[in-house]
Image 1 (spheres, one colour):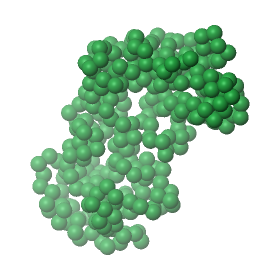
Image 2 (cartoon, helix red, strand yellow; image 1 turned 120 degrees about the horizontal axis):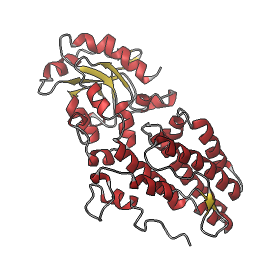
Image 3 (spheres, helix red, strand yellow; image 1 turned 90 degrees about the vertical axis):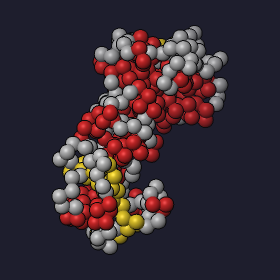
Image 4 (cartoon, helix red, strand yellow; image 1 turned 30 degrees about the vertical axis):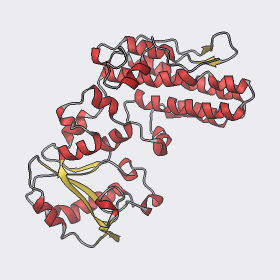
Length: 335
């Protein structure tokens, strides 16, 4: 039994008959492994059962709907309808039909209502896990487009914000890519492995950005990564990087993965293309992509002044903005 299927049956058979004539949308969105389709038998040990959201128009009095939900059955598909959810009702047993307005639902999870438009702060402050949960899941009923219009607004970043977050992703890679070889060359194999895993994770997240997919958090990151078009080729290199017993093999695998992703970045046409071939790190016997070149190309291509790196303190997100500027020294010491 999967949560999305359970939610559909629960709505159609138990919930919808209780609200005839009530204008609403119905869905299963937001938190929960089942929303992204990753639930299994282990997922049922907490916060799992018949669940659905009923979203009504603005200023609609939800009192009659709340009263109608008191007539829900005690059990559905062999599962209790009232059960504890650690995020709602103070952890007490309660039915998990959330009745609210569409605006309140999105503001509660995102801080803004995407129906009003997403500004730069809204985009940069929105965790991709939250965006994945709001654009994933399933819409069960939406004749008034209460959900459709909001999910459409969250489909993907505007191009300049896309450039910005891609540049930030490549900056993260650039800050640590030489350390796989530096630690390995000093005989610190554990350190080399740890850095390789961090760089591999950052490269995986870049893969989501390239395919316009919201990356889930760490528990499901690589499970979702396998669904990307580039997963077979890049994933093979990432597996080699993580499993390699010699730092040279780790370095080569990460360079191969980064080179493929750099080529895919070029094909997006968001910035001037960058040579995706790996190169020597300064004069050392260390190979890297040189990912800061992609950061520079992408930030140079930003057209919207509100997305451009500027003086500290003037940005909507000062930490993110200062970290992305190629002109500032953000790289840890590479000595």
